[in-house]
Length: 84
Image 1 (cartoon, rainbow, N blue to C red):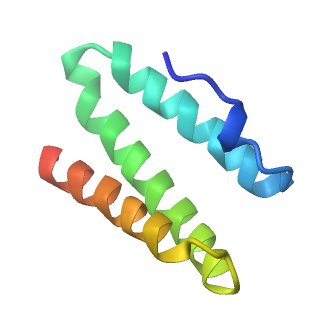
Image 2: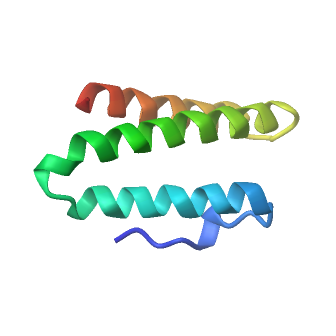
């Protein structure tokens, strides 16, 4: 199971809360019965799209390694779309 801590905790309350939700969804996907996977994956995708959009906007304002992290966000969303 994925745990919430380390580099996922940024000290920014809204982002940290969303990272916690992200971890919960990933863990739910890992143990879900097959019948629940489509709805859980749709929830994960919606959460990721919303969160990545917010985080991407913040990073573009001055995060030193922004492009690498933006590329990681795009790769995650691409993988989710392929699975769906």
